Length: 210
Image (cartoon, rainbow, N blue to C red; front, top):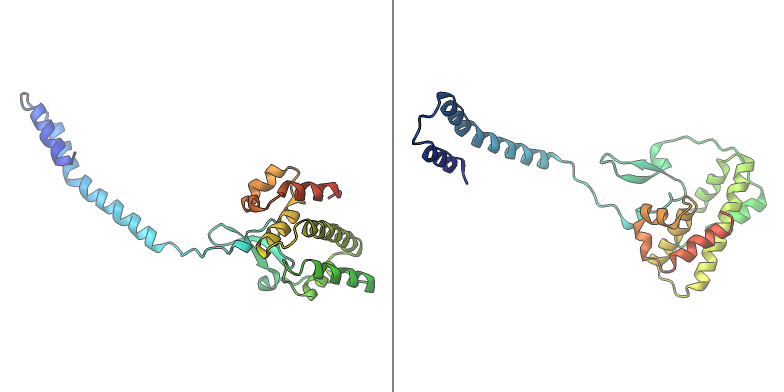
């Protein structure tokens, strides 16, 4: 029912008695102010919508359980979680460890293992370990070697695994490091529900002491 219709209805209802001047004054005010006010609100909402910054769709492979090598977690201007390349942040990081020839060989082996899901160049892998103090660099290297074993074991159990599933597997392995329960991992990374035998991956990581 429109405001004019409401006014007619009210006039009919109260036609048999004298209307108080205050009511008539308020009614005239409502009729004259509310329709323009509603139009102003609609115009304002339309302007706000047109001024909103465009939001680029995130690439599917950016929604990962852990940051890629050489990246850190961040937030964009829209409040979305993203991974940012450290080179773009102009962050100067201090090299703290001189890797041994044996460690370099082990890191190169890891680079080969994860090369199909992490396109980072070998220099980025090496530098990530060089930025750690020596004891942490070795601990981090052993951690990645155990993750590499889980990844290779899963690939052996999944012959002919397509590239998109390999990416999910990689993210599941990294994500399992950060959560104690499978449900927590799925809440943080719902896309992992697409990975067959996710539960096996999760507990395979946990059974390796990770």
